[in-house]
Length: 105
Length: 169
Image (cartoon, rainbow over all chains, first blue to last red; front, side, top):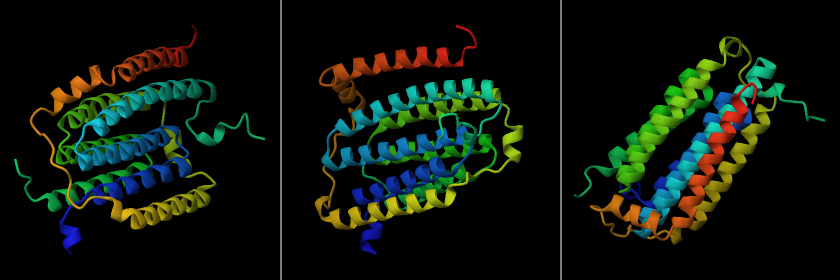
């Protein structure tokens, strides 16, 4: 009970792991490209949570700087990913990932 | 300032985050998913505040909940979702996907139960009042090269997004 009421770094890491798993399940099972991209955002947020929690644990700011860089990467990834999605929708008239099978053997 | 009722707020915000995450990956309509993701991101910004990271919390709200999610909603409006809402939502490999995610979860549990001892019992004290100032000094000092690379990355992303989305260059 004491460990439940005293919030340690491990609590934040477990929360990050749960969020990461939700994102992985979304990426692996959904067909809609938009929701797959949102699941990738969930994964990046889980990593960010871990970085900030470690930053708190060691009392420094390096983890927070890394989190800011990860947010920058997420913005770039979302812009390019949604651009690809628009190009894909223009060619195939659908947003289903199952239709992206040109290179499938 | 000493934190008030930390466990209560931690469990409340984690509950909001996990429920939002589950809604993101289960809703049929992508607009509902996007709204659930915004709730998750805002709860996570509050958790950043609990971790004494006010600048990251502000960046999270402005950039993620304000910028990236607006981009998502804009693209959802551009592509027509009427047909995909009525179709099957999960692909044919969803069983394998769940199994893989469960295996990954088992790996996390194993690592965290084995490695629990390496985490210190009490977090180190943190300077609270000049967080943003110190982050700015580090970004323009120690991390200046990475900062410039990030600006180049954003330029590439802008050009890439325009090239991808434009009909004829």
